[in-house]
Image 1 (cartoon, helix red, strand yellow):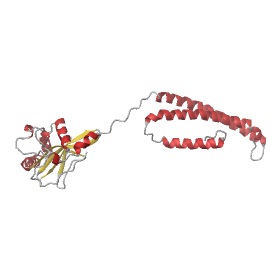
Image 2 (tube, rainbow, N blue to C red):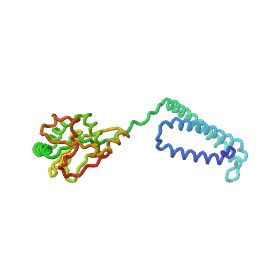
Image 3 (cartoon, rainbow, N blue to C red):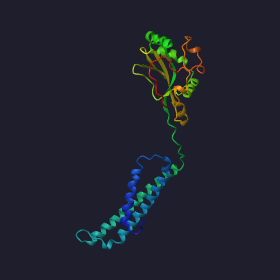
Image 4 (tube, rainbow, N blue to C red):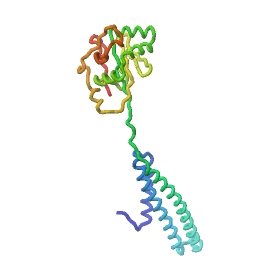
Length: 264
């Protein structure tokens, strides 16, 4: 139970409460609480103003009992009056503090705090995976003209949102571009190319930024066994292919490369 007739205990409890408040306000997580906290601080300052006045009055009231260390009552009474004067002066300064806090509280009361914007995360989706003869053509481009030209060539398979939806539906979404121990990596713009001349495959991926969404977890858990559509090389070039008719991400059954992990 609170004690209201023990000033020493009250001062100790007030000090402890302010220490806790100083610790708690180092990094507030919910700004919507700031107005209420500010109101509590304002009320505390008003109470402190009252405390200072009462302490000053107590020094004046009991000055007849005041003595200095040598036992001089006149000197002790003079010190009591001086202390009372300083306490009154401190209370006057607190009036300014209260005025500023009141203004701050008024402004804080006009704020409507909105939730943080949803955090976005970066994923990578497969645009096209080629092996065999189709991959050899791209590997020849890399050898002859460089990786940037090869990426520009493979970007013809990227149909934007349509490609994104196909990748999400089939679970070809990754935390980082998947690569094997023998794969090489090249980047250009929003695309990343992983390729292996030794294993004879190329894989183009595109950066995909999305807010966390539980609905995306289910497509990410689907496996290649649930999506048996395979890519077949026809030699007709990327622009003649339809993304919705062919799964460009599946490996040819003849490849010996290890399967890639899926994550979202």
